[in-house]
Image (cartoon, rainbow over the protein chains, first blue to last red):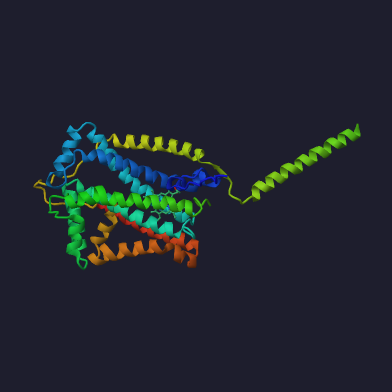
Length: 209
Length: 147
Ligand code: HEM
């Protein structure tokens, strides 16, 4: 007799066929983790569209301004990208508060809590890097502050160059920052999110109060 | 006749007891009961449409850009809202304390919360988290109002 092969895939693990009834209650999650992920997906989708028009470096401000007036649907895509990103920061914060309220960081979920704290930090940094990429005066000022904060650390000049590149006052955007914002930070965030979802199932699903 | 009525009463009593047993089991049944993931998918689809509708509504308002880089206006530093709290601290305290020590200590607190809440109790965990959240919310709001 042929033994049935138990196929186990990552997707089947994070999306099992049956889930506990209690986890389905709206009050169990307030949908906040799911909405955070949805906001992430919308930000990635609209961000890819923005790439067609955006130019990092000295042309940043002009490319954003012209995108709004020249590119088809440029204004709405930029708005969606911005608001989905702000929404993500807010829902991640509330998601964290929900987890604390339900004491859902207790064993065995403490590892997932730690992954969550890194997700929170990365979400903040990703949002901040987007603010700098606009290349306006405000972004340039914020880049200056970030640069001087990093330079205050031992080996800080190298760190500042690594994260911010050669940002001069008046030009918030740089190629280095662009690479962090477009590839590295979202990439790491995606991997961490998938790990986070995997752990939710590993730890026995959502902890409903 | 009376026999028949007695038998009926007995049957009803038995049914009552049965119902009662089912209810008691439901009340005290702590085993997780499972349901198909389709139930979740339906709710997720509704949530996706609701979030998209809200987002489209908010995004229909034009999003302004800041001051152009070559503007002759003197530089005005304005932190983005999520780091407004840090900027509020930077304006009042020495840079290493405001820019590194307080944010790093807050992050350290968050990272270790599960372990020390196990010792001090989850109620204290909740309380300390709320104090921290309130502190950051207030200074972020204070910066937004002054900027
Ligand atoms: C990119 C950001 C994040 C995403 C997309 C995300 C997503 C999710 C999702 C979908 C769940 C399932 C239950 C729910 O929706 O509440 C979950 C659970 C969980 N999350 Fe997050 N999360 C994020 C950030 C965080 C943060 C910042 C923390 C805490 C510091 C955290 C800690 C947890 C914990 C401990 C659970 C398990 C909760 C339980 O079992 O009830 N997550 N997350």
